[in-house]
Image (cartoon, rainbow, N blue to C red; front, side, top):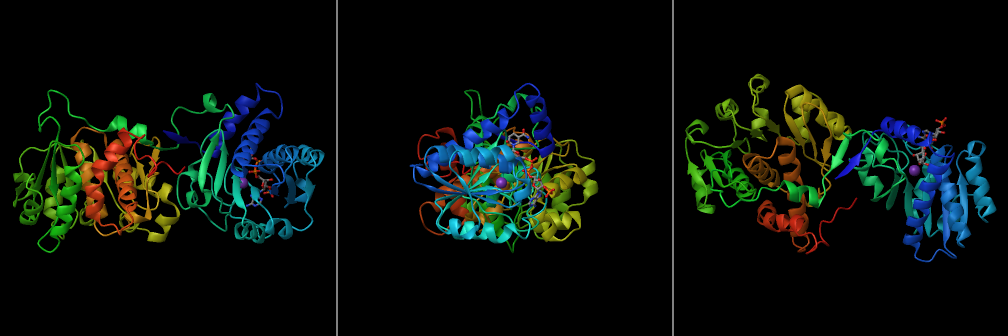
Length: 489
Ligand SMILES: NC(=O)C1=CN([C@@H]2O[C@H](COP(=O)(O)OP(=O)(O)OC[C@H]3O[C@@H](n4cnc5c(N)ncnc54)[C@H](OP(=O)(O)O)[C@@H]3O)[C@@H](O)[C@H]2O)[C@@H](O)CC1
Ligand SMILES: [K+]
């Protein structure tokens, strides 16, 4: 599990740790890790051309100290000082003593650089890049150099992943002590490139519950339900699917396709698309009535392609089992029906549906995904999976929000959300709690899409569903075929 903490939490932890250590030790640990990562990227440090973009805070200090280490190993290092009168003094002295220099003009060294270090701002940055830094950051990006962000890409919001102005785009971010939420949540995540964590000894000083966490293969593998010797289909969980309509039978077929591959023992479908479902999946139990007539289930998925059947949504929400509401079901949702529920509810909106539930514009949700998912969970008293470039999962009672690291633009294909709801519903039936079911489903769904896309042909929602067994295998046996879908961050 990768954990991310807020700037305030990082600062408190740093203060406690620094109180026990000699001055400057943490910065030296950070700089050593940063220089080692840079040396690894360069391959040969001697003779490499390195440019440091140096702001006015300790982020610039880390960068100068790392630059000094590279200069001592024979790199040609030039520092571009964005706030010359407020540059980290000791760091600059170390760089100069190691043979580095101050660049008079930023653009000439940038044009010839092999490596650029972005030390403009770290966790102390507020708002986007300032006007003087914008052309410099653009020149860095426009050069052939590898761009490494120090702690965070300058210009992004560390706590939220928002990008309010212009921000630097890095190939790699070397972050210190812990991940920050902005490194796991888009749009900021998209600026970070790959992310490498340097341990500076902060771990023991951080709170036990992080702000945000991102699953890895081993976490998902631990959650996946496996049948035991005494299992029968009912003990493994039965998931009910109330989806589709005469007009949209496909949504029902796709939700069932996801549900069949989520580990539940059986899938029951009820609704007007029963013929289409049974034709495709003879292993599914089907009925044409209302959800109430379906017999016992351990969870429900309601909503995909259901049209205007608000009565089916109400009936499902009256059942005392975990319920996942998606798509049309979200539009038909009456918040009052949620309040009376004691079993978990999982809502799975995309940004447009989330905006409607919150009564705000879609752009507001897109720009502030973390705040939006927390607000939705609190307001509806439900676990919420907010789909998008970074899918987020929040519980109503607070706790760590889960950020999905497996998202891929390949998932932007019709019907892929229906597969996800079936899959998550199946994991609910198998006994996972709502946050685990939602985040494990998002992870497997993204991994399946990556694996299917690696075949090099355009992807359909059915391909995603059909590749879910491979994704299960991938998380349980990460050694095999691990080249695809390994965490980018
Ligand atoms: N604490 C520790 O133990 C350790 C900390 N470490 C390192 O320190 C970093 C935090 O350092 P920090 O607190 O000095 O803040 P930092 O990110 O350098 O930026 C603040 C400066 O930038 C300015 N500024 C603000 N917004 C701006 C903008 N948009 N565009 C341009 N400038 C802007 C602002 O000045 P202002 O102009 O607003 O007065 C202020 O001077 C952290 O990320 C990590 O790298 C590691 O060494 C490990 C140990
Ligand atoms: K930075």
